[in-house]
Each structure stands twice: as structure tokens, then as C-alpha cells.
Image (tube, rainbow, N blue to C red; front, side, top):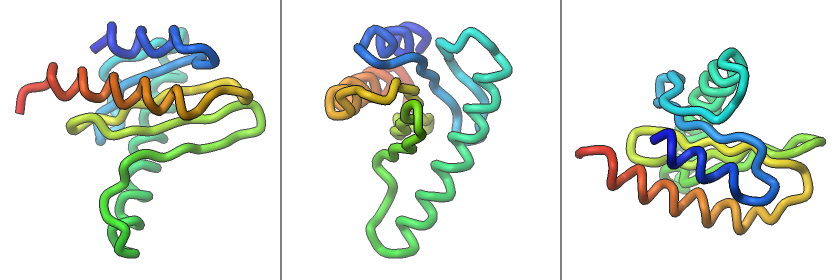
Length: 115
């Protein structure tokens, strides 16, 4: 799993990536500060869960992915098996390319995690 998140930081504009359980526990991270990884992991799981509940409630189905934009960059979330793949980017990036790489990483996670 660590290799999968490490490969994502090689994408231009990606400054960090992690894989978290839906309970918020960090499975793998490229962030230097473990406290930052824990905070981002917990926040990502909570946000993903709440948005997913809302999308189901309003009738558009399960959440596929989400982008949280900030002034200095973005946080992208994507479900992979029973985990959430999180990528932190700089402001000016090719989000389409990053989403494509995240989907590729999610496929690798799906193959690595038994049913």
C-alpha cells in the first residue's frame, strides 16, 4: 500500500497522499508529520462519509470522488475498496490527470486487498 501512495506523489503538482480506512485510521501516508496524517485521515473519512450519505439521500447514488478546493491547493478523495485514497495538490495542477492516476491507484488497491 505504501508504494501505491508513494507513486502518486510523483505526479506533477501532488504534494502528499495517503490511504485511510473509513474509520479514519491511516493505512499508508507520504506526509512527513504523522500528526498531520492522522488529522487529515480523520477529516477525510468524516467528510467522505457525510457527503456519501447526502448523495444517496438526494438520489444521485454512492459518492465516487470529491474535490475540496482551498486557496492554496486541493484535496481529492476517492474510494478504493473499503479505503479512501486522499491526494493533496498545489493550486495550479491538472486535476484530470491526478484523478486518472488516482483511479489507477484505486485499481491497484482493489487488486491488493482481498475480498
